Length: 191
Image (cartoon, rainbow, N blue to C red; front, side, top):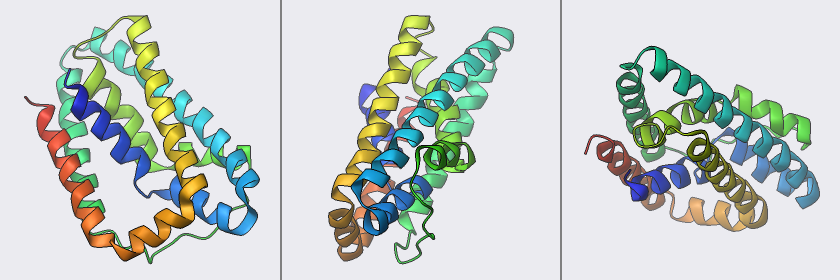
């Protein structure tokens, strides 16, 4: 397993702006850190649940249909390239409306967030299952990815104002760097 590609992919997808991170940022500004943390806890629990579902589903699919892994790697690589393009052309001035920060709203948002659903359904078959298939390895991987997600969410809570001004000031440079890292991760799946 290419650990660098795995870590880069997890950090880029979880730390870059998406619906969850934007709602967290907005919640911090409008309702404070406590409400944003309530939302973050819900988002983290759902993120872990989606990763667990993905690990079980993908393991079952690979057992029944061995060629599924290759298909998921192709889908995952294409998704990473799509994310790279989206990050490259991202405009931070387009923000979403705020929703009240609560555990339940954070939890439900993850199941409706296409970025999270696609990430959780592709990260396991692309980076973990080609090398590790034991329950322990899948559990540890799911926990590591969930912790990375929690770190990303809390980073947006704690440093949201700093990130917002930094992203606005250096938006294009940050987007290009993040997009290039995603392209690298997509290419490394096939090496």
